[in-house]
Length: 312
Image 1: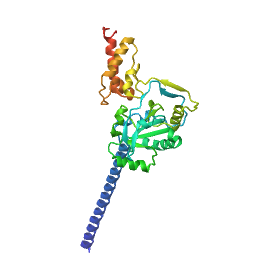
Image 2 (image 1 turned 90 degrees about the vertical axis):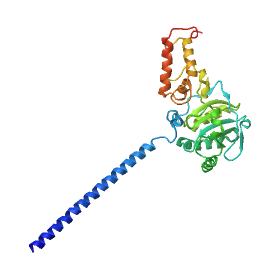
Image 3 (image 1 turned 180 degrees about the vertical axis):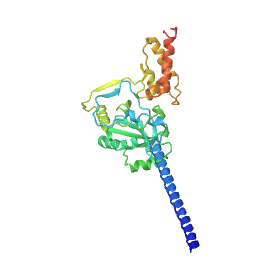
């Protein structure tokens, strides 16, 4: 009996040990699963915080957006507006769209993409403007969807109930406007077919509403000012600029300042933007590369002795 009892005790002890090992294994497995889940959540959150598009497309959205409904304090139009780049293209529905048919209308050329959340948010505002101004306003949506077919963009436009023509940016329109580094971007065209303003990012519909009414000759309570386009609308006009964001020209004589600006308008930025230093400063004032290059040019000119070419 004693031997039998001892054997049973050993069996119970083994079972007890096995049970402990099993419970411990379950605990380790649960911990591992929880850790894996936490890592996946962390990774997902990090991925979600990274824009889907290259930074060049989104660089100005936060800084240029105006999400409140505060009425604009002033309406600003270019005093030297350039003609709207002409085009003759088919929209995604197959209809012919020509700038020759737009004379006498206010035009908004709206660059957007289906993958761009601010662009999606802006669509209902554009639809509302098109409904309210009807044949006095023509909105043209230019899709920057490089990875989508015209048919896919057409289906998106139909689902979103877009009531204005949509064309593909790959048709060359984007290049005609000097390239569009951020989305959404809208160019405002007056009734004479000249581009008078550009808006980058989200703006309250009231901003467009007041500008449209002003261009149609209707009464607006907001003061209207003009400015010389020195790259704010078309980057190629950066050569007109007498100052650049984040560039300190103090200490330079007028002739030296002209030399510095000329160099900044001819020498390219090395940040990868494929723009001149001046254009990069205007287009992306937070670019550390163009800021450094501009500062180097100012320093070189201020440190150099005056030459005949620098004093002309």
